[in-house]
Figure (cartoon, rainbow, N blue to C red):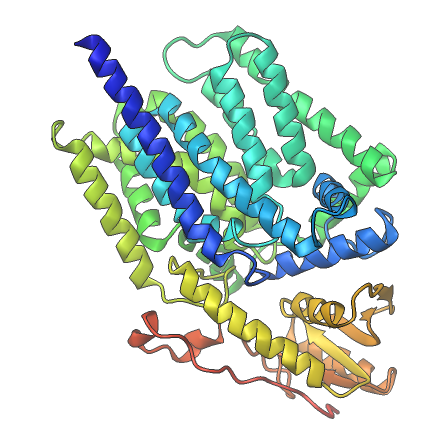
Length: 500
């Protein structure tokens, strides 16, 4: 009987792992390659195209000190003829999402019960921000896969060599996208987890972030051809540029992605589960430190980075979700626990799907209905590309989050364009792109455009008086309830001519 029971559990675990892999596959593959996703996807694609033309020294490669390994790897794949930049970037994100699914389940089984691990993994895979990571040309999903590999090696370790494997995987993940460092506290937290708290194991766990950090610093310096000091200075400069204390409505903008990234009902589930869990001494002993060191550093850091978005919050959901489901599941009748928990998970997914309507804005208020949201984004992207192509020249395009899509539209129409520095603007294909963050800055940029550059200012984000307009996500301004099931209508475009 014990042997049969073990075999049955093994068969169930394999079935759940395959099911979760299939879930990741069927929810991502049909949506692959249709859009650039959020604006940073367009920025990374444009950055890779500049890297291919001018190498790592190209001046306008977005976040190259934060993702040097990603650019180097993608450029190498393009150069050996495996495909075009966007195709390879999309494929890498998709494969990372599919490979992550069984890995997430295995890691979950090391931390909690198989049922909790499976339900938490399913909710995580279908969280809006996580779903988008697998269908947009962005390094975050690939970076997170390397982190999961590092975490799996750490939990599996059968010898000290596995600590080295974990450190190398972490280093590769950091080279792909270095904000992965915000999750590193989980290694010592898990080493100190439970009753057998060994100082030796705790110290050993610190070797993983040490190895990872060393790989990142040395690897970044080598890839970019910069000294350690110069590359670190550029990294600190990039963070300082966006570091700010929120004021007024900015508080809401910084907080909203935190509860919409995983789905609004999933967020409520996590809060309820953590609230129940902290009342239990056993739960606190097992979960409090890992959950805190997994989620708190990232949540605090991104709150003070201007323009926080749902993608930043995506990885932070995982451990709190497992911990919350475990605490709530223990309140259910033992024999009916798996079935009731599965029904609850389906209800949560369904409510997530209908409570937040589809939106072309994937960063601030993403909907769990990702397919419909992507349809909106594709439609808006086509409108944007047509509008850019029709804009009379010489032209200045002024704004913020719409500019990368505009730049990419011009690059796609005339490939191998080199970005050049226009002082207060980036120039591509003869058009000037001026980034602004306020109405006052927009009006000042529009005047400079007309008076100094003798060009016409255009914007999808500000009207002629400088009032802020919304392009992506504009459908939220007049949203009927039926919008949950029907696509949004054609959006209006705001073209500003002759600003005085």
